[in-house]
Length: 211
Figure 1 (tube, rainbow, N blue to C red):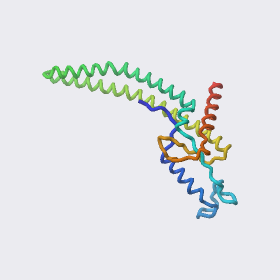
Figure 2 (spheres, helix red, strand yellow):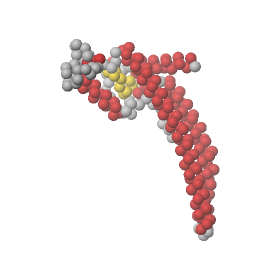
Figure 3 (cartoon, helix red, strand yellow):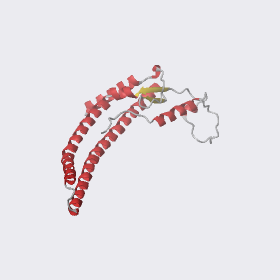
Figure 4 (tube, one colour):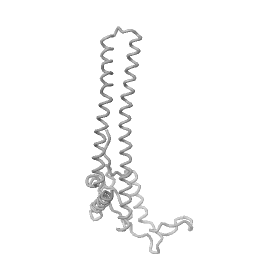
């Protein structure tokens, strides 16, 4: 019904970032027709020209498996999904049975009066509307919960990477994930996945201890 939360980066956005990196890496601090009063990005404002750009990557598949926050929240979401399915069965089942009974009655009584046929049709339409509303309600609640968890996940990872990259002098972190395959190859020397997962898990464990 609802997919598990996962660390995913837009393929289009990732492509733009990569293309931008290749473009800016070759720029100098020479004038490119921009007003000299416009602030210059720090990476291009030094006397020696732009400093080398440092790019690292995180394996999103590993992050999805090994980040405790994702594992715990996905399990919690699974439990909510099971509970929602039980509620749907409880409310949906009797209506579906009544709907099918009406269908059989209509097939077995083709000579029913027009008034009876109209009443039966209206009852079936009512049942269908109620069944649709039950499903939409439960799916909507789960989708909202999933979206909230996805947003929290991205915030957690982004906040951690903001500190991590500053300490390591990293400019860009790309998500290498089988679902998108934007990064076709990554030098393992720039794979920061293990460090990032360890740091994220340490922060999450400390946060739970405080609570």
